[in-house]
Amino acid sequence: MTIENEDNMDKVAARPSSLSDVAAAKQKKSPGGQSLGVGLEARGVHAWFSGKHVLDGISLDFWSGTVTALIGPSGCGKSTFIRTLNRMHEFIPGAQMAGEVLLDGKDIYESGTDVTKIRLKVGMVFQKPNPFPSMTIAENVLSGLKLAELKVADKDALLEDCLERAGLWSEVKDRLNAHGGSLSGGQQQRLCIARSLAVKPQVLLMDEPCSALDPGSTLKIEETISHLSSSMTIIIVTHNMQQAARVSDYTAFFLSDGGPGSMIEVGPTSEIFSRPRDTRTENYVTGRFG
Amino acid sequence: MSTVMQPPKPSKPWLATPKQRITTASIYIASALMSFLVVAATPMKGKLAYFVVFFFASVIIDFILCFVQRGMASAKDAVARGVVTAGMTFAVLPILSILFEVVKRGYKGLHLSLFTNDMSVTSVNDPVANGGLLHAITGTIILVGIALIVAMPIGILTAVYLTEIRGKFAVPIKFLVQAMSGVPSIVAGLFILSAYVYPLTGTLSGFAGSLALMILMIPTIARTSEEVLLLIPSDLREAGVALGGTQWRTVALVVVPAAKSGLVTALILGIARVAGETAPLVLLTGGGEKVNPNPFSGPMGSLPLYIWKCFGQGTEESITRAWSGILVLLVIVLGLFITARFLSERKVTK
Image (cartoon, rainbow over all chains, first blue to last red; front, side):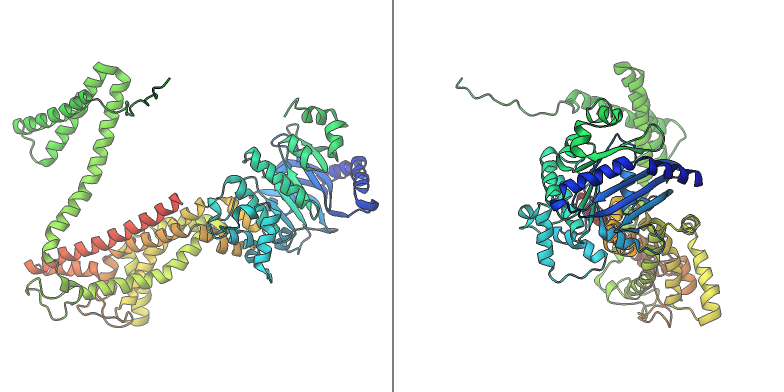
């Protein structure tokens, strides 16, 4: 373990350029040169499953109001990485991790942290649409309030607001009491996004949200992402390079050479796709492998 | 082109042709004839002999026919089909013959006052139309009802522990639950007798019987509920937790509601498991002849006990009463199974 940590310190030190690049790019993007600030920072995050090292010292900053895409071939640890960001990683038996994840400067893995509060602030949309089958559309959207025991003055307004932001309101406003399962796959996924929005997270993690969907639904969800990105930090794992190019401000490329997955390169999306520094990134984004 | 193209006539070309049907029918007829001949010609006697000869004859004829027409692979397939069909027949026949026998003997004792009278003023030699089952039906409802009220939360919570909490003790508890579902019911009865009746109350009562039924019911409910909860995709648990729910609220608001119909099925199977239990009730309830609404004092009747007693009395009238008691019990248990089936299928279609 100590060896791993030293190793990881080296890696953090070895990658200052890419991190400051992100910061610099962000400074350029933000209005008036004012940064909205770093919402979420990963510091040397390692992960293991049943002793198998799958993620090797990832350090990455996520700026408020931006969309970061994580790309890379299957099995390179992208999904594992975003699951460490809201402590869903520990949900898997045999999971271990090392490193820090700072949310507003505070480590979410610090002992004594209320994990449910972390997950309220860092919401998640899963690969497969998973609306709660026993609940209606409206109940699904508001289910987070019940689960986290939150009180809201005007539930109807929140319901409409969340569905509107998820781009679903016009399609379901007449059948809010229908079951979530009666929607199409794309609608179900937007329902899941609306459900995540209802608890007002600062950060939204999306684990390949469109991989089970048709192009039309994918387009709708991408529109939803662009609408949401002004008010929150979005981190999206995707296998679809065009999608990464369309929706994200920053792109991080992950790769595993048979061992644990590591981050090869991170930068503004336009640069990753037009002038990647690493040849492996170039090969991947141009479709030569992966 | 003015003519409209006619769509072809819909058909099912994969079905058997009339010729094939005749062949199949003649195999069965030949086998049946063969079974009559063999039974008549040899010392083998009885219904079973007909079945056995019929089975072998039809499998052999089918085998030869398939071999000649389509070769060895098809012939082996025919044998396998024959064996499987025979297995199914031998499994179903006893069930059907039990049902047939119960209906045949039990319907004579059916009358409406069965459900309004008890046996408190009826003697064993009175006509079947006298007396009734009311004390036994109310007794069974009270006994099973009390057992259910306690076993339901314990069984479901055990299942939740095994599937959701998955604590350190999950493996041994799972093993214990499985072992407990094989405990003979008389053992449960003796346990309550020595652990509750002798040291505490000193008298037999309905509640003691309920305690024994509870012991038998918990493992059934726990195991079925566990299987139902395991079917709930872990996506839903993850989604609940990712929304900031604690594990308890996720289980209570997401997992259990999603498994609701399956859990109802588990409860019904638990009821069906104990509704026909006799042995512990013989030991524990005292088996009165009068309607007794108080489970804590006085003997309490029940359907299985009523059947057992009536057979023991041995008169023609009481044996008829016993058969109609069996019929009523079977109808109740069958009704519960059909309800369980209905509820679990409704979940699948949804």
